[in-house]
Amino acid sequence: MIEARKISMMYPNGTEALKEVSFSVEKGEICSVIGPSGCGKSTLLFIFSGLLKPTEGKVFVNGKPVNSPRKDVSLILQDYGLFPWKNVRDNIAVGMKIQGFAENEIEKAVNSLIKKIGLIGFERSYPKQLSGGMRQRVAFARALALKPSIMLMDEPFSSLDALSRERMQDFLIQIWKETSTTIVLVTHNIEEAVLLGKKIVVLTERPGTVKEIVENEGAARIEYRYEEEYFERCREIRRLIGLKE
Amino acid sequence: MAKNRRLNELGRLNKLNRLNRLNGINGLTRMRIRGYVFSILVLLTLWAVGANLSSSPALPSPFIVVVSFVSDLPVLFPHILVSAYRVVYSILLALSFAIPIGLISYKEKIDSIVSPFVYLLYPIPHIVLLPIIILLFGIGDASKIFLISMIVFFQILVTARDAARNVSDYYILSLKSLGASEFDVYRHVIFPATLPKILTAMRISIGTAIAVLFFAESFATSSGLGYFILDSWSRADYNSLYSGIISMALLGFSFYLFVEFLEKRFCGWV
Image (tube, rainbow over all chains, first blue to last red; front, side, top):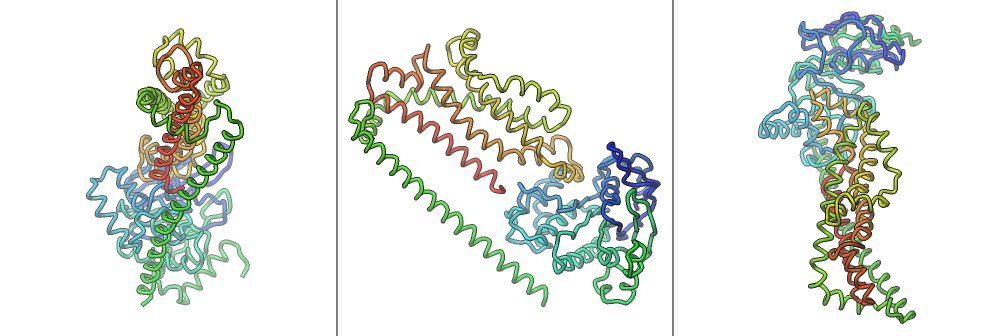
């Protein structure tokens, strides 16, 4: 379980990114965080991951305050965060290597992940030789390699075309069903937030504060895209964000 | 169905990728070799024509030079070894200081200490320090190696430092989110990210190192290619003079090829 208690973030240059943000994410839940650009969504993830310290407030994971990156939390950055100088295999393995797993254990895990993401034959390719969707899958594999109990994702699908984007959303749902990882997903795409998030946190413009938390029980199912409830939720979020119908 | 189609598509992409890579490498290598052969022929022809036109003993024809180079080899060989030893030692010494100092400069705090030193010391023409270096280190190998490595050190340091400063925080954060230590950041991000620039700097340094080597070997020594060249010159033995020059050129060329090999091996991602 993740709990944000009154998080405020003021950057040294005076930019106020977040103001008293509080919400919690249940274990095994997917939570979408949506808001206009520049509302501090990415900052929020950095704080959750322990890479940034909030100026005020605290984040608790399983009841313990977060002060530095945790081993059981994986962060997937915008544009995937892959290293251009490492091939697919080494990009997936890097997290396990850092955390000191044995070589044969890494080998086994990486092989099964490459199979899972359908990139057999691309082990030695570099990120720039892959399509956007493939890179995204490598980033997933790298995060999954550490068997995290929490995955934080920053605009994971924003640079994909519409078709790959839907495929990757389905892929994410499938991963979530298999692993029941807790996922916090930051997005500025309303349909994506509604499709994936069982809980949708709507943030205001900068400094980001929680405008509303919308429960969205039907989410995280591929079929949800075609259901009336899904469209209804999308309209609701659109209204909340302040877009005219 | 959909899954099958995707697998098929992946398979095709995969095969294409591999084919491309194979053809690409073979095709490229073949073109490269053709390019080298062509340029060598053109240079030799120009040389031969020039030698014929000038008919001066200071510009013998390439054919004579090759013959004398081969017959000089037994005498040349120890000199080549000494020179190679001095250059390799100097470059390794320079790298072992320049790379670590350059890399740790990615941190603002360290850079604020390192940078002023670099800006004050780099623009000095270090080669004019030779007399002082000889006074301090004597006329043996130590002074030559010190001079060459000092010059190469600054060239590599400036490049490594600039490259490390330019590594995006994005990659460092990405690694740190995986629980990386400070050492992991150097190992997985800073070093591999700066390696292409460092190797480029090395390529440039090789030319400088050999030029400085010639200068350092030009007096107070009786070994090395610099000595061999100047000695042949003073004896007006033009054929040996050319043998020495060619040896020096080949020395530089072989280092150059070695760096290119390193680039191919470790920087395939660029």
